[in-house]
Length: 419
Ligand SMILES: Nc1ncnc2c1ncn2[C@@H]1O[C@H](COP(=O)(O)OP(=O)(O)OP(=O)(O)O)[C@@H](O)[C@H]1O
Image 1 (spheres, rainbow, N blue to C red):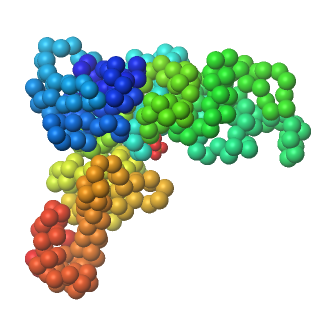
Image 2: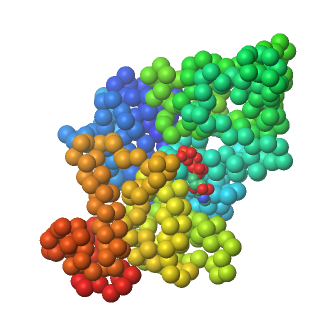
Image 3: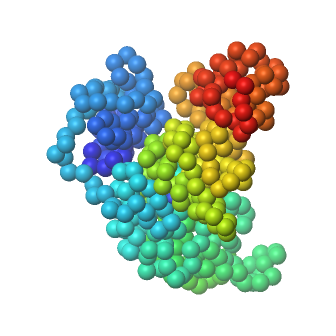
């Protein structure tokens, strides 16, 4: 593995390509973590097997053997192997990160930003896809030209052509004026195309044509207009699955993705939490008389959370904690029970993790609920266990047990506790 993050599967764009019909297009993802490898099944059809056990996520050391389709893979850790360059910086544009995987990413972004090359960014919600696109734009020759965001999920089918390509006056009922579309408006600059996987088939064809010919024709117009845009696309799912399922055009994929970037989930890079807290708090505290700070035990707690809503969720948790904190210090009690995505508002899009077995998925959902409920309860009751057990209608010993199980016992909840 040359990269800290790599994929294995049948599709030719994987880091390791397996010519095995029982292997999925993108079968699994590997992440190098110190002296071992974290393996995650990427939703494969036939599964990833360690002996008799089907695994979704597992940490592997040297010598471990896993089976995918009819192929057996063995982990071999070679210290002398060449690895991808890692940036000496722990930021790129507006992005910060200290983990190896992020610094490796920054090195790639530093290299490609000034080039006229397209980019496809894949990552869960809130991992920073739009921020990557914006930072690439700022670091490119196009920086003083427009940066336009198009969300494919917000393009109504009937208006999409006119929004993207513009229309001439009188082109259709209601077209009282000539209108310039997104592509023309972005001329010379960058278009960030979010949720590209949601584009309808007709729009996929139209996008491909624009990317190939570098021109658009307004609705109701005759003459093609030259446009010079760099397209950075993003998706929360692996488009190679969509290609396999016949829902996404492979030729468009290759046009969009001369370079592909996989933004890792926040739970896979806890080393980034301290520097992220520092950066996010500097924004949140902007305008305050004294800067906001976070204490070490709060950072330690946040570093152990699963963050289904990733950096966006962390930002919101810090903003909430800052609003509630009595001084400019955020302490463990201010963030207890957070980081499970549970208190996320609807627009935060922090869905339950529905992968893996029913039992494991249910346990994760319960864990999220219990942590959020217990923290809110204990804060409301200022740590008074008797009051909390009455309010929750739980026996004291049961409540104490639950608090222990969720790592929420013994926290100084605002006022004195009676535990
Ligand atoms: N590495 C980072 N450093 C600093 N801020 C970050 C980083 N990653 C994300 N953020 C911040 O987190 C928030 C969410 O990021 P962003 O909107 O780019 O995510 P996204 O992946 O595009 O999300 P979605 O898929 O839901 O649209 C933004 O406020 C962004 O500035």
